[in-house]
Image (cartoon, rainbow, N blue to C red; front, side, top):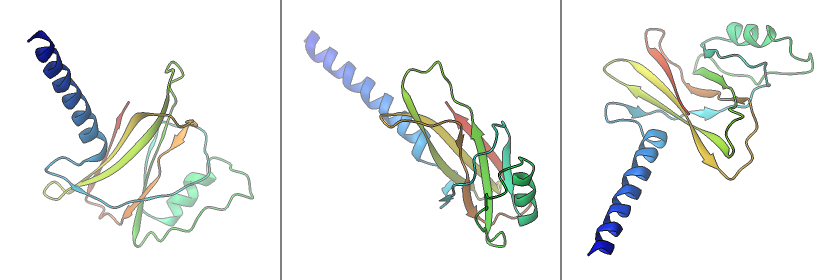
Length: 153
């Protein structure tokens, strides 16, 4: 009888532990719909804790120019009439003994006209390189829509 109770207790712990983590990382909550996005690799810039919402080419060029990148660096072309660029650099946590990677998800709340860019840190067997630039191209957002960044370590 004790073995059966222990078995069920462990099973319940495993189910709740894994289901919560999965929901937080990969799924938008009920009020939000998932937004397709495209990962984009941009030149490494010095670490800043800034959140970037880039709606036009002049801002895009200005931001990267301000970091005095090598003159040979060419930024990828982005059609800002069709896309909005979201980005955030995240600092490593050297006290962590395991490797981690970032999982990204973009969600949209139709009633509130709000985008949520979720970035979650998850354990991995892969070697992680820091700082991580989390750039995402999403469909063009109207200027009256809110964009919120949510990072979960």
